[in-house]
Length: 203
Image 1 (cartoon, rainbow, N blue to C red):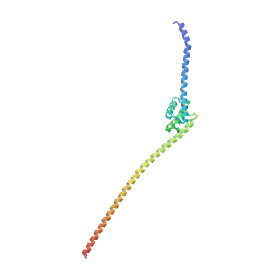
Image 2: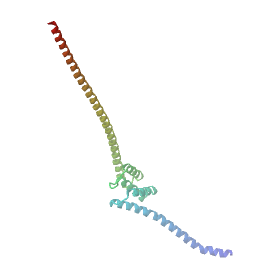
Image 3: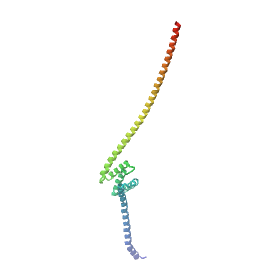
Image 4: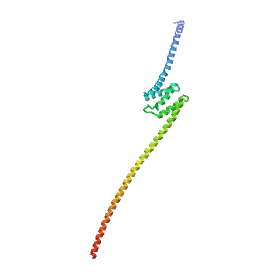
């Protein structure tokens, strides 16, 4: 193949190569564009399911957590982060987790302080902190009451044992008193008998 024919082939193949590159570029862009809508749909579907009372909370929390971590600072990531936080405190959630909700709302507020939902997230953070602190105080109070009840029960048993011991001591004292009275009575009779015998001899 001479140089002229090679130049012709390259010249003719150039548009084909350019078209191929453009085609590959379009597919790549299409791929990038199609990665976000499913996540956006997932967030929206989760929000709709939350309103319809039909949602698998564990699965939704896992998926939204992955979205929030994978594309932060995007609209989908912000929606996923906020929805994730609300799932933990939803009244429909059979196992609500207020500590996790506090973490997620705090994360949302720190990452997106200028979002329209930042004030709502901040309010949730304050409320959840107050709730968790109150819950901790209640648990400590209940623990103290439990300890006091245990000590009171222990003291009550000890008092009962002491009363039983005192009752037994008193019972023994009464028995000893009765025995002494019987002994004294017997001695009196002996003394009376001796006096009678003495008087008879004196006559």
